[in-house]
Length: 255
Ligand code: DGL
Image (cartoon, rainbow, N blue to C red; front, side, top):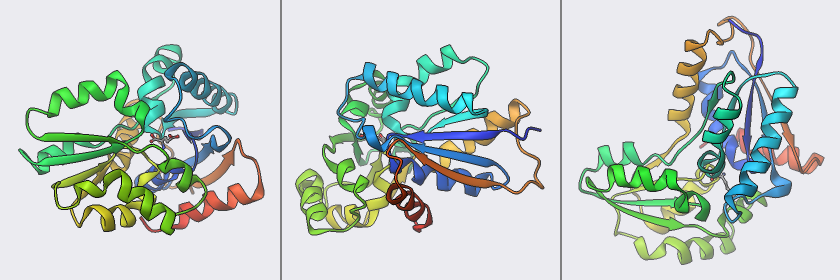
């Protein structure tokens, strides 16, 4: 058993959708969530820059004593997880990936819309995932450029958001069997996406990441005592009271 904390990070507030799953799965753990909102979005950046930003955050979390790291960002997982695991072999590092597998298993031979950042869809990790599942279903990847910026502003339902989403995925209304939210920001606008695309099942990687974290911590004897009282602390590179209040608000939203 261990009394260290779990460091969770994202390019911004989106990873809080994963954090909610982590807390539900492991309520006895202490979590420190760091959002790199000053540098968001990551999804339009060069992979080498995403690696540098991610490494800086991991170093900071480890210096503060993290026992494990959760990369609550599909983009940073794709660009940095493998390298960071090589660099820190003693630290469990759990990432998140687009939930294509459960979507295809639920809709074999179906048509699956995968919404993610441009970086996630361009990097090798997604190509491998697509190769693995595209024989069993039609996979339609859509890079949702500009969407994270709106969500980072706390805009979860404005006319501008609706217009942006209609532009990105409106043409798929009635055309797909399921939607994969391949960016951890998108669960916060799931209802708006559903209004635009239609009432089909949605899949995201949050619950799978939480189960994986439990497995990894258990295997290394790092789970907290089940009687411990867990906690959640927020920090941000955009270190203002308003930003931390926005994170708290996102954490309290029902998803
Ligand atoms: N939330 C992130 C993801 O899951 C990244 C969004 C961004 O910064 O572009 O991909």
